Amino acid sequence: MNQLVSLKKYDNYIEASQTLQLLEEYGIYGYIANEYTVQSDWLLSQAIGGIELQVFKNDLEKAKSVIQLHEEQIKTTENNVKVEYTIKNSKYGDKTCPKCGSNHIYQDENLNGIFGLSILFL
Image 1 (cartoon, rainbow, N blue to C red):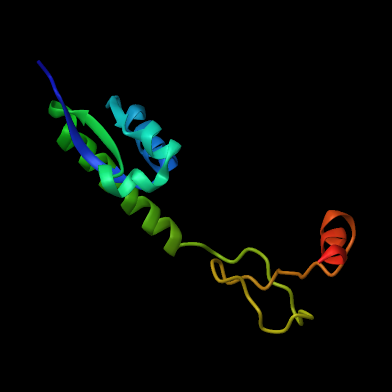
Image 2: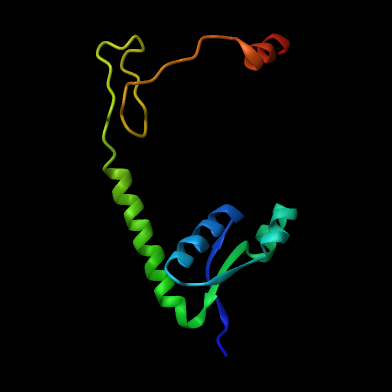
């Protein structure tokens, strides 16, 4: 009989679910253990070892290689981000986006709506 083995542990359900969906795209099925316990009381996460992504024993090596390949693709994508928009002589000076390096940023100085009301009450 094929049994479930631990592949990876997570602190939150969203990351575990995303990884499980990635694996299912490659035909690897698994189970997320302890998800409801951690969601109902996140302080128990440390006590029970977090949310655990489990896969079948015969799919373990394939699952590890899929996750490793996906993480490498993310790293290369993050390093190849190109600046699409730049503004010459921006009124904000040399401020740039820390992720892409673009200076196409602005500061919303309009205090309308809910934000303006919350500032008024504070």
